[in-house]
Image (cartoon, rainbow, N blue to C red; front, side, top):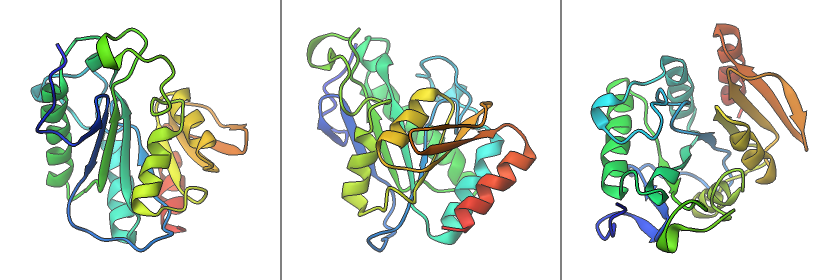
Length: 210
């Protein structure tokens, strides 16, 4: 069942906002927004055991390139498993720490993590349908933008679901990459596929151009 989360960086019952590390950034920078499960790590369907976490190697060069060019890396992840009672914030914290540790072993660092646990199938205070922080709503991106002083329009988003791309579009971004997806343009967001080395090269070039 969901736990109280008293020791976790919860700004409200269903929203985790954690600043990672001590790196400072100038106001007005773009960010690299990343979904977590299915984008950074292999999606094991409501991952709750850190021992099961395996990174997707394709995303490592993108994180490393953002780190090298001084672009903030921000994880924005829906976590409805908490609302549904499959696991609590304690399990999320353990899994998230494992993801960050595995990235760190590859010299790749994340600067902020936001997680939204609200879902209409939840119970108690987490039982909220269409919460503004839950993707495809743009709330997590907007919140990160406010806290880090980001230029959202110039920012990039990478995810494995249409909801990730819609959240980016609704936050004002103009470029996104969809894991194993197709090239599309929706509402001002140009979506590129992220399937192979050529696609990855395009993403890396876009990060360097920021």
